[in-house]
Length: 144
Length: 415
Image 1 (cartoon, chains in turn blue, brown):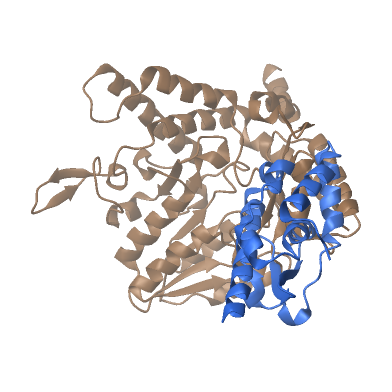
Image 2 (spheres, rainbow over the protein chains, first blue to last red):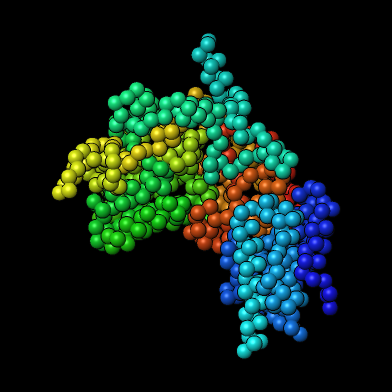
C-alpha cells in the first residue's frame, strides 16, 4: 500500500514536471499519464457519473476499500485523461477525511493553471470538487 | 498607365498589410503567433487603434445633445460613420443604418420588433440548419411569445443547404426568413441571391446574418435587395461591442421601438411618449461612440485594402489550405461546401478536437475548438465539436504551413 501522503505525492509530481522546460514535453508527459489512468468499469460510464464543466467528457467513480477511497475514471480527450490521472495519483488511496480537507497546490506549482485553456482549467476544478464530494459521501455512508 | 499599376499592386501586394496589425507580431509560449481564429474575432490595424486612442485622448464627449465644441466634434465623427457605412453597404438612406452592440443585438432587435408587429399566432419564421445560436434563439423566443412556428431549411452532408427543401417551406403563414450569409462553423457560403429572390416572390422579407461575410466579400444591400442585414464591428477589424443593423426604411418605419430610453424619443410625458424618427428610434441610450468611430476607421481601412482584392487573395489562400490539409492522412473535413469562405472545420481520426486545439495552442497556433455556438450542426454530424481554422486577408502561406506542421505534430503526440 502506498505510504506517501497527499502532499508528498503532490511534491513528487511537481518535481517530475520540473525536469521539462518546454511545454511540449510537459504535454508529452500528460499524454503518457493519460494512458495510465485507472479505467472506470463500463457499467459506471453513464450520465450520472459524468462530470459537468468540461468541453470534453469525464466519467468518474469512487469506491471505498479498507477505509480508503479509490477512484477510477475515463475521458474522451487524452489531455483531459492526463489531468484526471494526475489528480487520481494524488488523491486515490487516501482516507476520505484527508481527501476532503486536502489543498491541491501542485496544479498551480506545475504552472498548469496558467497554461490550460480556461474551459479545461474550470473542468479540472469541477473534477476536484466532485472527487471531494464523492469522498465525503462515502464517509457519510459508512457512518450510517 | 498609372491606373493599371495601381490595380495590379492592390491585387498582388495584399500581404504588405499584415504589418499594420501589431497583435500579429508577437510570440506566444516562445513561438511566433499564428492567428487562425478570425471567425471568432479579427485583429485590429494600427489605424483603428489610433482612432480609439485619439478619441478618448482628445474628443471624448456625448453625442447629439451638447451645445459645446467637443460634443459637436464627437457628433460629427459619429454621423460621419453612418455615412461611411451607408456607402460601404450601398444602402439607399443613411437612416437605414442602425448602430447596435453587435450582430446578436441586431438580430434580437429585428426578431423582437418585427416579430411583435408582423408575426401572429399560427404564423411561421424560417431559419436554416447552419445558424449560429444568435440566429436561432431570438427567433425561438419570439415564436414562443407569439405562438408561431420555427421552420428550418435542412442541410446536407456537404454542409450546403438543401434548396429543394427550402422551397417546400413556403406558405402564407411564413412572415420572415433569417439566415447566415456564411456559416461560422463550416464556412459554407449560402446562395443568398437565390434565397432572397424566392422569398420575395412570396413577398417575404429576408434578414442576413452577415457576421462571417462582411470581412470577406463586397456586400451591396440594394443589389441583393435584402431587407435586413446584421454584422459585428469586431469581425471586420473594428472594436468589440459595436454592430450594425441595416434595414429597409419601409420595414423599420413600421416596426415598434426595441428599447426605451434617451435619444430614441421625441417627447415624453407620463401619459404618452412619442418616438424619434429613424435611425434614433432604435438607438436608445448613449451609444458606443468610440466603437462607432473605431468601426468607421476599420471600414475605411478595409476600403483602402479593397474587398475585391481581399476576396481574390483569400479564395486562393483557403483553397491552398484545403489542399494542404487534405494531404494529411487521418484528417477529415467536417463539410465540403461548394463555395467556402473564411473557415475550415476538421477532425483528426481518433483524436478529440479539444486535444488537437490545445497542442496547436502550445505551438503558437490559435484555432478554435468546440461546437462554435452551433450545436444543431454538431448534432447533425454526430460529433462533439470540430477544430476550426479561420482566415483573414493578413494570413499567408507561412501560416498555412505552420498549421499543417502543427497538425502533424499533434497527430504524432496524441495518436
